[in-house]
Image (cartoon, rainbow, N blue to C red):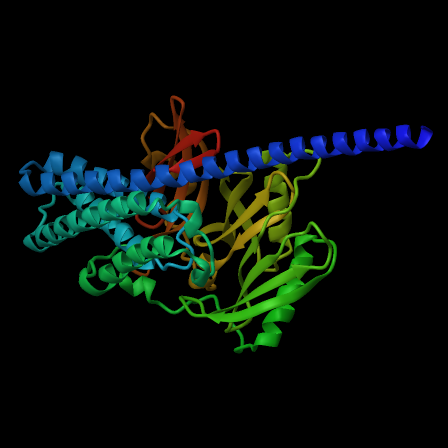
Length: 456
């Protein structure tokens, strides 16, 4: 009888354990499913916003062709510039895996910068010439075609019931045929832009001459696969990662910066893989991505995350940098850094660092912009004093800070400016005054959000 009671007790304990396990397992999968649905909703929102912005671009370009007012043209082209920037942001937030969208991003950048240059012309009372109007007609026709192709992709995704989350896999061979067909649709769009759309020949910061320029920051000899793997293993020490890592796979990838893609596998359970891009020339770390790890006991705030990013940048041995802004993306904080040379902020030489708010680890690093543009520049001496630069801005601007900054403006052009930060009412502005001529080069309005700040 006693053994019988013990057996019943054990069965009750096992039953309770199974029930508890089932409950917590169900809760886990419920939370995981909710996270996946929220991420999918974000992707869908970006995709439909991309389509809406392309449609609005079509309308605005069409209106510009019918306008005969310089004032209206200035407003219209400024709107095109803003809309193109939003479309580019939408596109960059889509999980398109290995599909190359460089030409699509370049097209939207060129469209925006070209329109901005026309808005400045119109605002200054300059006439827009026949050559520019011909380009606008071409862009209008092309934009209409892109809009139709994106609409076709919507229909394909709805017909095949494809979710954007399924497109994010790196290995295309493991994708279902339906998902592959959608990815190929984006790829064909980018390919057609490359082959059929004429390059905008204007002095804009994203003209082909700049895009095709050889990276200036790559120094040193060409390295081999083994050297790339050793560099990757050494780099993670700067991330304060504990535990041992071994090399998983290494492959050579082409692109603007030819690099070895090195996957590092952790020896301890519960740790994530790390993927690093090591440039073939010079062995520079181009990027690092963390697969994600279990959350720490307590989530950190933005200020602590920025400090962690700053500490990491200090260990890179790339010189002095200053944080120029941040943006929250899910459970990560993305921090932008610009290089410093002789006390001047060098905006073209930028790196990005992502810090996980949950794990407190550096979760991402991107030095591609820095490696593409970095060089030791011969900076001119300012012809204006700081006080003279202050006098050039609108008197309604309540100035908070003035500093020297090198900004990119055009085709291989960089300008030394005074960056004047100030407020009008509750809005923050950055006004850039040419340090040699005193002319106003650019104005940025900073939009503050709970996730961080962005400039428009």
